[in-house]
Length: 392
Image: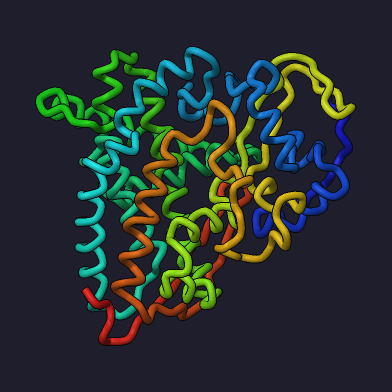
């Protein structure tokens, strides 16, 4: 067992808001074992930035990890050449050029139609009716599963995320996760003959073209859905909430004094949709005087790195003009999020600018609860706009 100092948490409180506990860890025990999570947490930015790259010590390969057991072994649970092989195969579907030339025009058209469809109501749940749908419709095209309804894609994504964060071992969560992965396999089976006749740049097609085994293709499609739906959904909705609750920051964007890219970067630093990345100790090691034993579980807390006081003054403040360069919301090593370019383009070029251009008088009409520590975002967001809006 690791010799790291022990820190106890209240799991319910940690899920409601992990940042106060993480601040205490950074201050008093930056590398600490948390019994309630059965893991040692790295909470300071520099430790995470350095150690995440040491895959020979902190391996992504976790045969008994939740993600591997529930979703099969995907590229995120492989290291070295095995990881790079599948990452290269997938890249043509996620590259900045593919996003610009193929996916972006389709996403822009979808966003326009979506905003027009909700305009007549004068109000909506921004998570359910906008962020979820736009994220899902984007992901349907990127994965190649255009036969899956947006609501089903959101359901299976959330089910897998819940399963991968089910460190309490609740059987009902695991059962639901298995149901979600079965649904994805069914939709893949339906699309295989269609894509065989009409191949495109979707993830499903490019991995088939690269000759990856079908087991790896299925596992990687599940990986893309698990992260590619909830994280952009939560970032879209969360960034909108941040701007509506900080009107001075929104005014900077409207005045041309700040960009949507700065909003995106600061929101991901402030409330990271991806809170952590798990690793398994591959061999015994001593770091900062702390002994780690082979087989132990490690969490690199990206959310905490974004609040490290060594880099960010008043990290609890949402400030889109701050330097977010040291933030690592997508990771820092060879497992840097492959979908980062797609997410950035979706949110900064479509989701945020089109929403605020169409609904300049958008306002919150009720509480916006956030939840989660491994993955974090708002569960609902009631909003409304005057009768003359949206201006579509």
